[in-house]
Image 1: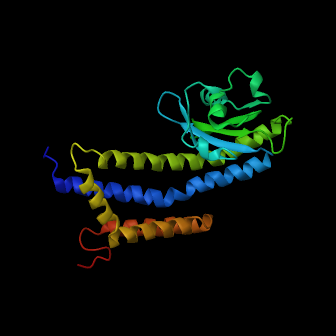
Image 2: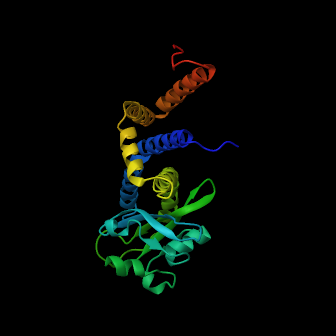
Image 3: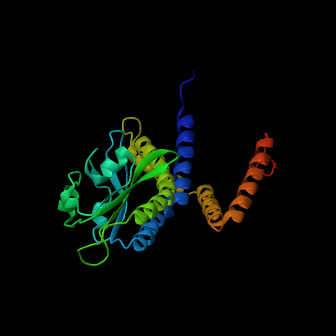
Length: 259
């Protein structure tokens, strides 16, 4: 095997950055979409607060990915240790759970309330599943208004399960893009092999280049077209597949086959 040259590594990093930036452009609206769904579904359930927790590592820890409500900003990226709390139980069991009085439930994890100053009275938690795997937990907290609150009903638990299906797809897309970003960060911050200031300068020049800007513009257009409906997504797919077939048939020359 030949040793990897600086040119080979430069090309790989360039492709990686392109992939990361396209992923960011395509998935940047996902966090807003998750929050929008939380607001809509919480209103449907007459719930005051809602949040999405996702797996954090391989040990079963959870991390708040998105939240709405009074203490939403305080929750983002806060972690719940493996097996702790109602969310931890739902993650490990894969079963939804509704608790009308958390003080009487031994599984309730009070540390989050202590950290935020919020007072959790009741919780409806349901698993987020994607392709058969539990990837997180969707929670609805309390009711709108003042206590005493009416308990969550079986019908509301069923509706929360349906809401979880839609949110799980968005969460999976977001987490996939995050993996790419994390990988890029680890590569460009490897100070033992690269001078970090040089790498940052190189990235700034690369991302400011006309070719990269054009790629981002194309990604935005694809996102806009695909978001307009099923017919538009199908048309976009067919057009892109046709372009890929054409370019695959060209062994030399530019995109148009012209030297």
